[in-house]
Length: 281
Ligand SMILES: O=C(O)c1cc(=O)[nH]c(=O)n1[C@@H]1O[C@H](COP(=O)(O)O)[C@@H](O)[C@H]1O
Image (cartoon, rainbow, N blue to C red; front, side, top):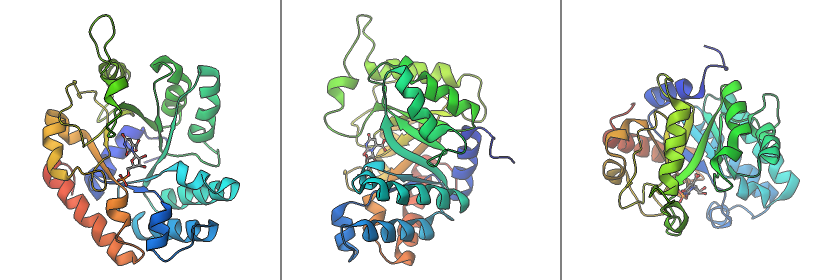
């Protein structure tokens, strides 16, 4: 095994071995307070280190949410850099939740920041926003493939405001979300066991209403604090269930700061997800 093994293969194995679960690292000010930490750089550092030390050796994927680190400026970014490196060293795959999307020439610089080997924030995958046009993401898609990394492109997000954009139809009657999923399917064609180009599809949806068979991973946030649960996954994902990577942030993090309690919460979530998706341990 080398680290240049494609992301889809690495993710498939991680989900099979560790269970299909992504835990988000979202150091909300309210969580820092609940953990008895200050809403400052020291609190951020201790919170993040606790989560990484408790979970990086156990869960398939950790997903630090960049916004909570950016709040603290350059010192917050330094904490994020350390978390990404430590989590990867401990065997977790890291999805940098940065939701980037810009004109192609600027996109190339964002790609360099997260998907170029040797970059301080190099991650196994990033979240991307396709609303400047899917094609504008090309530099990130190409660099990800070149470096054995992946991307998750927003398709049907978990928030109630998403449909206004994502369910809008073009002249041919195709929704924006369907168009994104079609492009991802084409991108992943022929990849085994799973392509590196994933979609974000919220577990909170009443129904997908789109073909989720993209031969790539489906990141499913919205479980826990946003009201969805593992039991919603079959309804939303249907035949694509086996490729779902459920994501939980506050639903696990609220069990801290005790490392054992964090681990137990992540284990319970992973077992529930495996039961409903049929994937992994
Ligand atoms: O890309 C994401 O991860 C994401 C997409 C989406 O549609 N909805 C969504 O909640 N997220 C992220 O997933 C996390 C959800 O956190 P919890 O609601 O605490 O589990 C946050 O970091 C969100 O930014």
